[in-house]
Image (cartoon, rainbow, N blue to C red):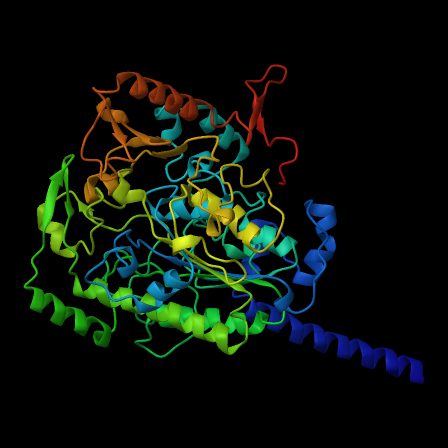
Length: 560
């Protein structure tokens, strides 16, 4: 046998061994990455291969790396589940202790007019990562679009094959945009807008590493193995690395996020830490709950609530278990900030802290109040409602490369759809207006006094309400519009509309419909037009073809 043949066979065996090792590494590192090809039809590529091919796929700047991450601004987004506007000490809580979050606010900018794009988790998150109103995607109840006078959106989504609570795989979302610009990307925790078949998870939307993300909206237990054998419905736990029994979810997610930052530290990165806390079930380690149990006893606290719009909502904040969860997420942020400092990344990493929607404060029945964990009082109601308590959220931005606005507080009017363009802006990356069509950047408000008047369009919300929300939280189908100082709520099935001057009456105590009938009328016209035509504006166009009712296509320039 010739030396050439031996050498060829040796190289072949070596190649097979290298391929096997790299393939195994690829599967482990990317956390069930085979789901990408099996379920989405999109072939996964490594970051380097992806960057090499982006010029042929989606337009954007050249994907050159500038060297170590110290030369580009990193982004860490910390997203808390169901965190209410009044849950933090820096936002007025007298019960919860949140020293690390308060420190972030003291060193950065605290926003006082930040809104969720939807009063429920999944749709609100879809907006955060897509930059578009969730109703455009039929989220969360696509079948109700037609019922509530949205025929164009219904037909458009049906023809394009959209599914409930799904961000279309073709759309360039936040993770995609950062990855296209040469950033490493990691996602840790709750996702909640993928498909039940496993498609549409972070790997499909530009995140190189994904840990703990599923299409489900909650864990059955916050303690490993994150299951509850006594639960009414058995759901699989999130895909997480194995830990010892009793490990707390918030702690493990923090470990994983810090591990990803260590992996990425020599490159620019976007890392998302999306806690399943403080969503139900209300569970926390006893050493965190104990201090709140004592505090509640010292206060001689009792559950306080008020009746409103056929439901009730909590007005007292004194739930010990929830307090323990608040301490857990506060400790998590403290650990992340310390890790950034230890790795020398604290001077070039922007940290953004926020919630997906308002705190869980409402119920259909008084007897449920002991299980309702928080209040948004003096704001009205909570999660699943379009009153302020359901959509106002805390938002803190700590950008070490920018001098904070005077006083460290901004009244800039912002909503969830703004997060995508703002993070691009804070990283010094070009905006993608053909993608985040309902969002604008609020990065300028971090350093400059701005009031949100740069918005050319009102803020819109729509929630058709499913049976779980009606039976559990008492919420009713509603659309809403916020145009400057005026907020209109249209309770669709009731035929009732309410008008509030949010500047004078942020707690929505006084319906001024009778005092300003023309304003109410004009805002209702705007709201109806938005519901009817949101599929015909800059995001989609309806084009007639011979013998057909029409098809929906993305506008010229949209990257799909």
